[in-house]
Image (cartoon, rainbow, N blue to C red; front, side, top):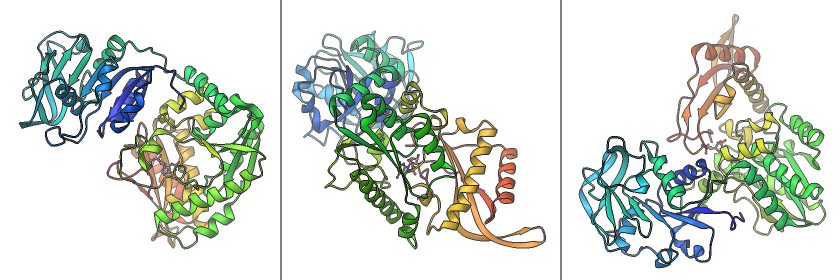
Length: 518
Ligand code: XMP
């Protein structure tokens, strides 16, 4: 994203699992934040939009990893720095503090006691104490030069330290996690009272920024957008329509793996209501053919991903002089497939919309949402007056129903699943539960079991229903339905969908499970 003129707080990532949380907290407070891998610190050299730097936690130990030290140019920049956990230690070391492996590790809740007043901890303590969340083995043993002790915990004498003259602060605990009671207050103090960053990260400004970025980048060239009908690609399409008007052509590929009525609804909304140039491609037969007899989840994903691109490319070539390809890739998509910051992160699943593009593709990529979290995209969509049905729609994976039918898929199975899912979604909406749930769906399990209907024996598939609450899909908890709802949904699905005689409820959270079955 071309955000160079937007004030920001940069989070230097040393590999903490909570780095994203820090970024989210800052955005929730209304300012822009960006994560950068510690190896790329040099990129900040000439960046004048950085108003503050946060050094993240991380799995490394300063006592063994002598190689990593705080780049001196960060100090020369003379902007406020807040070190968190590992970042706290790295900052302390830079100014002559001593770090050692503590005999008493602190994991979990700890009580912090005030030692001196500090702008960073204004309103953070109640009765001179605060509950914080720690996760460390090393501690700062000797106070660095020019710093004072602001607070201590039982096992960490220098748990909060400050050099108020230069605006350098270090906290041994994690203010970004919800278990730290007043963590948000501390981050707020840092970004607004110390860094003095503007509070201008909101959907109105994002709309303006993204539209002007698109205009600047694309100029009079033509853009193609792969529209899926989900919130993300729809928001991208609306942004582009506003930025470049009819120079945008959207291509919608019906994989045959969509939900009931989905393809027709999308045609209606985007062609008739929004008046987009929409190329509709019905490729359901070819997808089905290629997936026949494939039961390995990763193979399925790869086939769907590459076939999608092939078909998409075929139709994209027909759009004369198209130079850019726009996609609705989001921040979490980038991180789960390939870390956006360049830090290695283990691959969980190959996501359909990331990384699958052929290297020889002649288009340049346009991904205006790639630094946004899902909730931010929804807010932006609302700002762009996106149809409510699409705006509030649960996320739907690129490989569609194929990953909700474990094992081999068939036309029959897809039809059965579409009917069951349709009933489930309608009931959720009728009972006003749909918007309380982050994502819900029906899946078709590839086993047949015996049932009895009337006086006859049945031997049919099992329908699994799954509903989860989540903020961004990275972690999720299963949603608790009441018994009446479950009774009703089970009856409705079994009574109306031929091919299903049993309904089961998925009660797993993520982790250890994932949201989708494959
Ligand atoms: P998992 O199953 O990994 O899913 O817990 C997390 C979120 O990502 C969605 N998902 C995908 N979205 N292309 C997408 O655009 C994909 O290939 C894909 N796979 C999973 C999933 O629906 C959930 O919201």
